[in-house]
Length: 121
Image 1: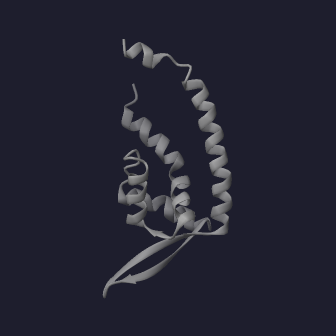
Image 2: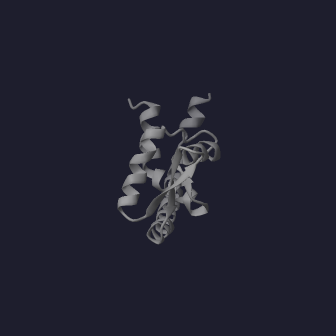
Image 3: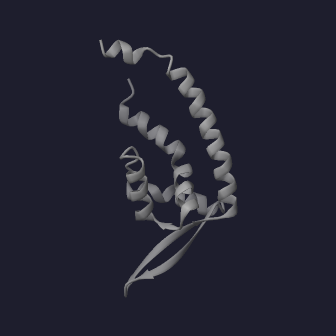
């Protein structure tokens, strides 16, 4: 039997790029800021480990969907900010449409499932 954590991780991994690009569409952000925004806006549903956030960021940067730049904060500290590029905006438009289509289709199937009714009796 799959563990709830396994199911959550598989679902989250599939949409993490959409979430990152959605946040970057609003404004440029650095990694820790992205992590905090995801956690806050999702009501705690997306608790992303700092290190696991960088894999999709690096992948999207290599694909030209986002770019990065450094900005000095204080005397010695440097932050790496991420910026969505036109290719990322185009990908995001398509990805949101596909996400909604898949989510709506899955929701149509799930809402007919009576398992919640059975478990609450």
